[in-house]
Length: 209
Ligand code: NAP
Image 1 (cartoon, rainbow, N blue to C red):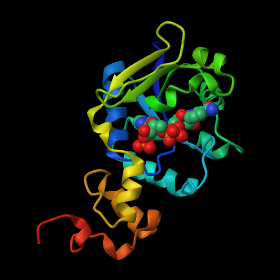
Image 2 (cartoon, rainbow, N blue to C red):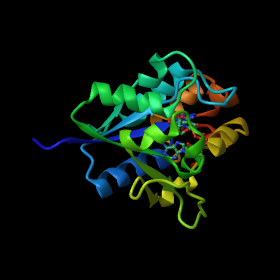
Image 3 (cartoon, rainbow, N blue to C red):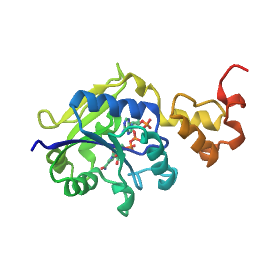
């Protein structure tokens, strides 16, 4: 029986956006992955002021609902303490013993991998896929041959930071995130949004009046 090829899409996802979804889809096609698990970080390493895990988890569920090959894992949310990728991968390896794991994340995060907890153990747990936007210069760490693969994703010009900023400024985020995420952000007042500022009749819709 052939082994399951399982993508593990690790990120803070604050919020999840169409760049993440396109990246997962492109990597899945390019590496012939059977499934991609989106794994929102619990308490992200060295980060403060992150949106509660319950909101980031729900947004990941909403954004991936339409794709049967995309799933969401709470493995990092369920584990107490800061999120370290070595723990993510050990937990998933125990849960999916017959799978080959492909850890997919932003290239900027991957450049710091040498400083991650138990860094030397990471290479035996998964192959690493660094997704980046075209033309973005990268300083990749030393790694065993074939351990890190870089894949360029044009849609990664979209960023969570920019989306949070746009929401705070009352600018539209339609088409940068799935429609359900626009509504979720407004409904829960995330990123300084006001619920009445989102909707087809509002200025934030960005449509022709
Ligand atoms: P980050 O520093 O917030 O993000 C760095 C860059 O990568 C940003 O441009 C970000 O864009 C992008 N990015 C993040 N996740 C992505 C994804 N899945 N697909 C495409 N682009 C992505 O990174 P982070 O979210 O905190 O961490 C990313 C992953 O690395 C997480 O799973 C985290 O647990 C792991 N990590 C582990 C350690 C450790 O073990 N010590 C340290 C750092 C990170 P957006 O903001 O638009 O997503």
